Length: 185
Ligand SMILES: Cc1cc2nc3c(=O)[nH]c(=O)nc-3n(C[C@H](O)[C@H](O)[C@H](O)COP(=O)(O)O)c2cc1C
Image 1: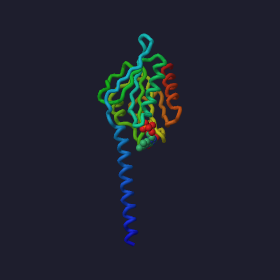
Image 2: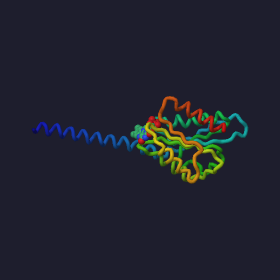
Image 3: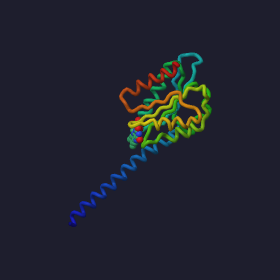
């Protein structure tokens, strides 16, 4: 009887430790999604003279999936003749984005949540109706809700295009083609 209670106690403690580890692990991911990672300005130049400009702003993800998608989209837009600026959202970013004809916003999804660093930046800027806006999210189990949540941060206007990347093998080439297409339109 005493031994049985001892085993039960150990199982209970193990269960509590497991729960704490899971909660800490989840909060680590959520925290990363809401962190300002600072200036990571990168410019893809165009060979065209007086090339039109595009901006790709994305929250990096732990495994770099979102980074790869953002870079592929940027390469596609660049291939269509645009000079593309890529950066993370945050306080370092200019609030005047009127020079960009195309603007891309991207976020990973952790526990149903998109990045608040990205949404705070989106809420702080003005986007005109003449600018093309692409919104994307990355996740394993996406529903339309996450994309809509990011689009809501645009205020009264809608995104030109919304894409969810579900961590598939061909996501990077798909992103490249989408970038090329939006740059060519
Ligand atoms: C702790 C955790 C929670 C996650 N929650 C979701 C979720 O709620 N919905 C979803 O679509 N994907 C979810 N994912 C998958 C990530 O969104 C997906 O892997 C995303 O592309 C970020 O990739 P990366 O961290 O591998 O770079 C989760 C992943 C982890 C590790």
